[in-house]
Image (cartoon, rainbow, N blue to C red; front, side, top):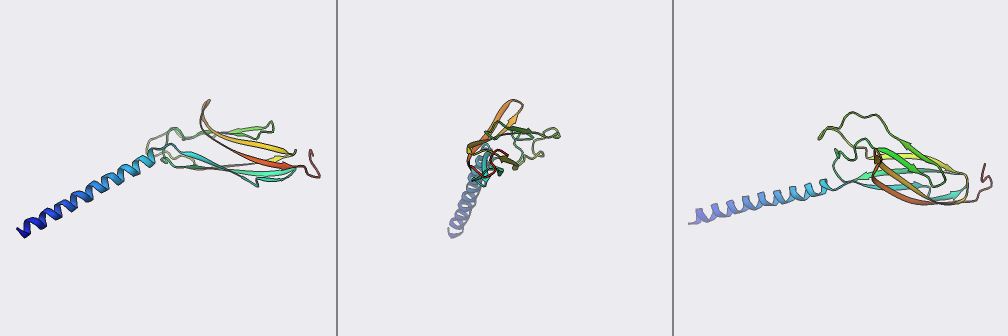
Length: 146
């Protein structure tokens, strides 16, 4: 009887471990299936005109081979009447092989004082797939407008 009880306990432990690993895989899969999100940071967030600002965007979460986020057009709206857009030639998308970009950056100089709402968008053709905004403050400087 002791042998049967020990065998049953061992079997129960193995089944519980397998079920736990399946649930963990499911949780990992749910995290990977989520759509990536953008985090936008302006450095410095405030200063005197003319102010050169560096924007950095991090793509967080999701899978590395997200078809929607593969080879997007980057659209920078500087809120001063200037818009920058850039893209690159990419190989055709291949599931499981193609990797998305995880970091983008750009610099811009603001010559006039004011508060600016900077917007970054990732686009596929004319469709915006994700966007992020941040605000900077530019104070009047000795050379404003030059």
